[in-house]
Image (tube, rainbow, N blue to C red; front, side, top):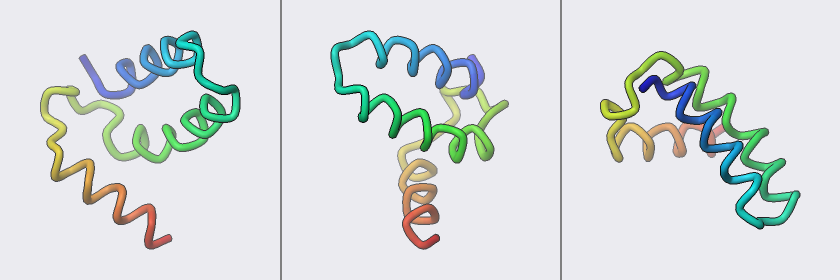
Amino acid sequence: MAFEQFAQDWLKTYGRSGVKVSSVRAREKEMPHFIKVWGPYPISRITKKMYEERILELNEK
């Protein structure tokens, strides 16, 4: 499954999980930054290191 599809499915589930609306909005705002980088990647190929590096890149902006 491509990361983009996984992310879209996850956001729908997350939104129904009882979390605060502000938390859902924050995830919806953040997700495009990850989709831009990993959209077509199979979710199974995204490593913890790749995720951590992306978080650091976003924090530097």
